[in-house]
Image (cartoon, rainbow, N blue to C red; front, side, top):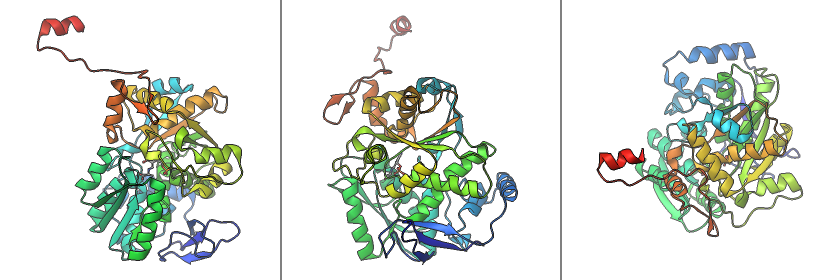
Length: 432
Ligand code: F0G
């Protein structure tokens, strides 16, 4: 068993804490916390072999596309506290049409929308829920743009924990809200935005001793590393040139970078892929920081129809900045129109995704056009959420009713309207 600890992410501090402390930030400097491991670790050949063998196992931990890779995040000393819904196990899908649209010869999607609650959040939630149980916590909470809450509600229900969910009123899709209700979480819609509600929930969690399951929780990040580890395993440990992902609260960017570093240190991969984080233009503080430098400046009123990434003050920006820089990565931003059209193209591949996920393809199109990404690059884009998460957006796009914030009309470039017809074979035949 490796010995795991929490360590402050700030280079000037690096304070260490026991893995069983209920902490989200460094008590000395306020920095973000990261899980680190010491002790003897298996070598790359042994790891590859055990990961492969577990694919043929029906044991719940092995059948999980997260826990199958547990040697890469050995923070538990007893796996009895794990609750798995068989998360992960998400496919790599070739998408020739989307590749062409993005200006690439070839493009593969890692589709996290195939998860039990329809988004990548399940990869992290199974780990953070296990930690909650290990710590003996009975109540868990999060603020969410919808997917974290859906995931937390499901895992809390499965684990027998009480779930308290806080949502920005009027700015989450009904599909996601419906999930929280159906999984039985106590759900509050607060008249404030994500960033404001996060501050509120942190106060409540502290005051009431409720365990916080937002991505500031370092165990969420440990679980989300498995998205990258599974993708590399599916590619027989051939690292791509680029990994493209949408950026909101920047937990995923942090997790992906940590996973790549650790896979490199373990000798599982040779080359290091570059991370490309894509933000929506109206909620792009990380893009601003990356391109203009200087102090981090939050966006006070973030706006985007991709409500999953409608975040102006992303908690994990220091980690994400480190990871993007150390991978020689880039940050790009895309417009509402670009997201909407890219999303329709992903749909035409027979794949589909929710709006935030489509920022990836919109970003790729921009990065190939401006020469940052080469046409022949080996690119994996992570689709973070399922198409059915936000059907209202889709219906509006295809019926020319989609409006960006500020009342700006979104062109239905690849629209596909349904046709109302009489119950008459002759009339329908005429139309076909
Ligand atoms: N894509 C989807 C579908 C999301 O739900 C989120 C985040 C992101 C991308 C951005 O990921 O925060 O790691 O940069 N959703 C959170 C939530 C904030 O509450 O569900 P990130």
